[in-house]
Amino acid sequence: MKHRISHAAFKELKRNLGYFLAYSSLRATLRPFEQFRGNTRGVLVIIVDESWTDRYARAAELLMTGQRRTLLSREASRRVVQVLKPSMKPKPNDWIDPLGPYRQLIVITTSADLVPETLLNAAEVIVNVSPPTARHLAAGRRLAGLPTLPADLLQELSRADLGVIASLVGRRSLSKKDLLSSGARRFQGSPITALGDLPGFATLRPWVSALARDLDEWKAGTLDWKDVDHGALLIGPPGTGKTFFASAMAAELGVPLVATSVAAWQASGDGYLGDMLKAMRASFAEARAKKCAVLFVDELDGIGRRRSGGRNAYYESNVVNCFLELTDGMVDVEGVILVGATNRVKDIDPAVLRSGRFEEHFYIGLPDDDERAAILSHHLSHTVDPLQIRKATDCLRSVTPADLQRLARKAKRAARVHGRTVTVEDIKSSLPKKTKLPEAVVLRTAVHECGHVLVALASKLVSDVVVELEDSVSEQGFDAQEGGRVQYRMVEEILPTEATLLARIRISLAGMAAEEVVQGSRSIGGAGATGSDLDAATRVATQMVLSYGMGKNMRFYADRQKIDATFTVPPELNGEINAILAREYRSAKELLTKEKTQLMRLAAELVVDRRMEFKRDLSASRIGHS
Image 1: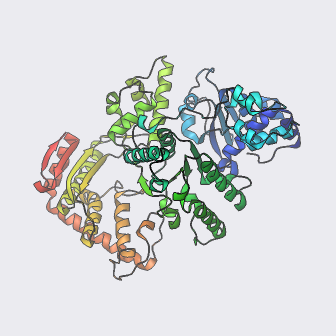
Image 2: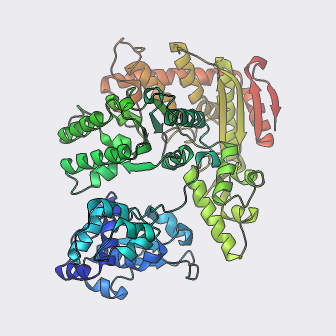
Image 3: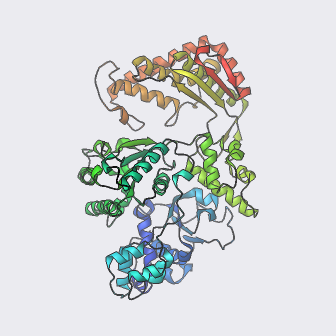
């Protein structure tokens, strides 16, 4: 993308206020992304208001070329900017080759539902364009030779929808009365659904309900603000709905949402430290001005840590200090509820997380069986009952809510082709295709999972176990589905001991040990990825040596929270970690060798039954299966 445009193109923009506003807001929308900042290869899907489709198409062409001719003729860049409108005939999946000759491709559309699935999957960026800001409106009017308008009036106009902006921004004179008479509406994009009308988020609902009651009492004057919960941190992997929750929470509470992110602060102005701090202060000021609002800060881990070292230490220290200053004594800032979101809580400065800022920490994980069906039904506007689609969604155990939303788009597209509302058949046809596993692989997987079961029950750390087996795996679309899985109900332990930690390692390694006992060798099924059996075992062993003083030397090396796949272990300690893993693997293998007959019997039954349940007090005897 071109960060600069030609002089001729700039002169053309001065003559066309609509193109200027579209170009300015498009740049602001894309500035956080690497395709803009680093000019890297990628497909970008930009969702725009239908009435401004042409303006944003021309703006995208100018952003790609920097040349005036793209504002005058679409032929100049038709290969790198494409437009999809509802009035157009649906495009086939091979409409555009994602691996074509272009370096970057922008698709301007009014809805992601119109974009072919292959292109949507290939997109690095799928984003709703941000509307023009008050600053954009002021600059555009100045370039067009129009009189200056008051800042508060421009701010109010920037909150209107694009139809109103198009009608009023070019007038020589404008008043608040003109805005009111125009029926100006705040730009909202898609309607926001209250949390009470959404599936999922079970762990957060009690907190929101309590907060809603507290806000009602505070507004009635019967409760002091210092007694109202005013901060929460949402922790979880990408795609689990953290940003979605913030908007739904604000709608449930009936208060405005001020949504921003650390990336947006960093992208403001020219990206210098002063611009970053100014943008941060502006977000807090906006939230305070609304008297009662939810201030949502996404990508909170991007704020950094003080004393992190490196060439960015000065920048990060100032950013963290400014954030601490703005959030210091949040209990005294009446009406502002601070909600943060992160994928990497360990990267956040500890002072940011202390009480007084983010009072509550909530982990948002993958949806369970009931939630998956309910979420998909919600994205299908409840045209299909959740109970009807359970058979389809129960096999999608590793999908995120974002994956389910994508599946809903695909099902709706399939229904449109047949000119009908979505049916169960449309959903089934939209599921990732599956590959049937060879019988030998299914048996090996069953042996692997039953190895976990037997060692877990022998450890006395679990009260009951459920093991499930699949005979096929997903080919594409979502993360590859596991062939088998084990769910444990752990015995509650307030203070785990060294014996407990060793047992956890043994349970994690038991699947690979079972394969070696029965098949004579182990596969890659329990390793090779973050979150795998071997990763879990290695992490616990590393924590024992580096964090808990359970190695040869009773010494503290690192916080247990810092020990993950990216952590570098001191070379002199690798031998101790390896010894723990080897010892517990041998222990698991010895136990399973003694129980080989039972291991093979359970594996054979699992191949037939697909699901089995166990309880520890029955000495690993099966008590029921379905």
